[in-house]
Length: 338
Image 1 (cartoon, rainbow, N blue to C red):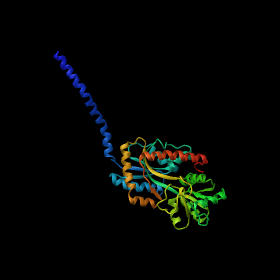
Image 2: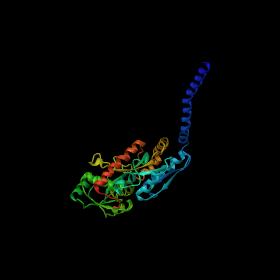
Image 3: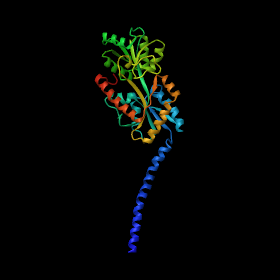
Image 4: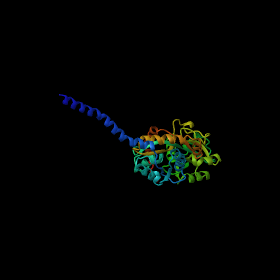
C-alpha cells in the first residue's frame, strides 16, 4: 500500500512539472526573436529607391537615411534601382527577405497608379508590403503663362468652358502624378483641355515659361522658383492644405471646389511579414527624423511637405489611393506610355 502511495506521489510530481517544462521551452523558443528585435539593427540597412538619383524620391530617401543611421549606430544605405516607373525597385523589395534590412521609399506612382496604367505589375501593392510611415506629400500646382488673362481658378475655368479642347496644358508626362491630378480636376470642373505630355517636369516648365503652352499642371517643386520670379502665375495647388513654400496660393478646394484633393506621397515600407517590433522601431525613429526642423526645411525647399502617419493609417491610404486612381485611369482611358 505504501509503495502504491509513493508511486502515485512520484507521478503527480512529474505531472506538475510539465507546465513548468513547457513554459521554459516556450521562453527558449521566443528568446531568439525577442533578442533579435532588441539587437536590431545588427548590420547596415538598405533603403531602395526605384528612381534615379536627384529626383524627389531619392532626395527624401537620402535626407531620412542620413539621420536614421546615427540613431541606429548602423548605416542606412540608399540604393537606386531605377526603371519601369519605379517598378523594378518596388518588385525587388517585395521579393526581399522580411528581416528588416531592406526598406523601400514607396511612391503613389508605383503603388496606386502603375497597376491601372500598365494593366499588371509584378507585385501586389496591398499585400506584398508592410507599411511603416508616409514621409511627405507631393503637391501639384496649376499655373498659367503671365500673358493669359486668368488671374484666379474661377476665371481659368470660365475661359476653358468657352474654349473646350483649345487650351493646351503641359504635364511632366502621361500617367504622372500631375497628369492624373489634372484629369481629376478637369472632370470635377466639367472642362476639357488639350494635354501636351513632356518627358519630365523640367521640359514642361521650360515650354510653359516660353509660352508654347498656355498653362501647366506640374509639381510645386519644379515650378516654385519660376512662380516667385513672376515667370508663371500660380492659380491653385492640388493638396488639401496650402504648400509651405507657396502659402499665398489657395488650394483648389478653397477656390470653389470643396473637398477636392489630389496629391501624391512618398513613404517607407518593408516586405510583408517583417516582424512588427522592427516595423514599429523604424516607424518611431523615422517620425522623429521627419519631425526635425532641419529636415522639414530641407524638404520644404523642394516643395515637399512632411506628413508622417502610423503604419495602419498609411496602409489605409495605400488602399484608398489604389482604388481611387484605378477608377480615374480606367474611366479616362489613360494607358502607360501614351
